[in-house]
Length: 392
Image (cartoon, rainbow, N blue to C red):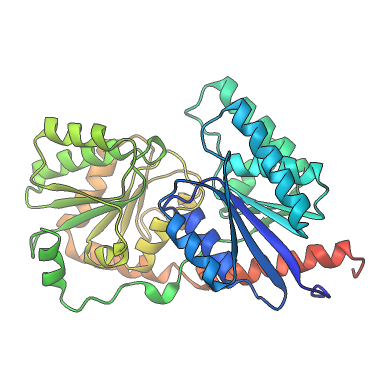
């Protein structure tokens, strides 16, 4: 049974970077059923998508910039962020607080518990802990997630791998775990190209040269330096290949430096953040993802739906959708040699690439539709509110 009255739903996210979690959160708050839900977005300041968030105010979404909410750990600011959340919750009295990202997830849920918010939900778009951290830091983050789970009525996971890991680590009651895929607008992929050769020329790319593409933040998680190492290896056997990385971030100077040292600047382009990434995907021959850990990488879903065969490190959420030797290749994380060999095999064999491309496109179905993602969240909200109000 649906709620008997309109319910205020407050989404909280740490920073509006140009990433899958952030884009899907913005889409959710804009497209929730307004006859049932009144959406509010609370977020830290300074993200590349802040302008998109501000524009939502004209479409009926209240946006609240959080002064003290930031990614970096800072005990004083973090306590002030909890207080800021509490003031916001007591003022707006949300029926549901739905948090995203690790910092907003911990601080927001703590504040929601203190303020006795009726329904608290957290979406795990990936974990803040991973195998490359020190054991102390990893154990601390796991303990914080266990605490947050005790304050949650439901935990949403975007990948089966993350859900299984949460169960094995005792993060939340498995009966409160829900799988809702991170979605994309399926009709946007593959992007329509008016003139493929003109599009490539506009990017400074050769018309008939094979293109290897990656998309993501230039930050440690995405491990862009392995993309550069792979490019150098592939160019030794395929000197006409071109490599493009769409995205930006703190590791850009290190990436630029490595390109310079390897002497491959004439074949590798860093395009920064682009709004036309879907079109660039449609130009690509192979997609590469070198992340050390992932929830469910939106760029990989977009590449698969675009029919661009991927080669990726076999990490948690990646293996949910990438089936080795079926719709792409998954190689051991950190194995640049294997990564390079798989990229070369696709570039050298047109028939193999065509087979993989068709399988890639066919592997992304309605489960990954972004509007279906929103409807699934609405159903979860309604179910939890109905239980709270004694209807079930």
